Image (cartoon, rainbow, N blue to C red; front, side):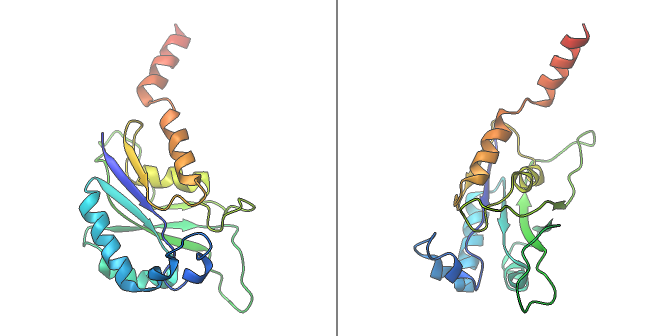
Length: 182
């Protein structure tokens, strides 16, 4: 069993949008809060972790990370457009580290996913199921592993994890196919 973390803290400089959801949202407008958090992720989750952020903060946050992190991209074919912003923010970076090692026979995961934002979820920034499954793939997560959703917000990540863990394993799929063929 491996233990992973996913974190979607209030984005740097945008705490005002999270104040109603996170009582201490204001601390996330300080880059040093992010630096300390990344150190905590690295210490507490040696098996792997993933961190969502927004593109304007990537320049500040990425240098705070260990040298072995990678950056994935959540591309949003449908995204909200903001008045006065001539180039839409239609992707979000996800910094990730570690994860389960895979053999050559296992499927390769792309470092990007394309899926639309969620609408009418009652929670700003709720992550779509496909995004969550992609993060689990980035980390090489498997049923039986432990995922700590450090900012549960809408509960979408935890719900997607529970669904992920209930899916049949590859061996179970092969066994079912063999049984059906017999």
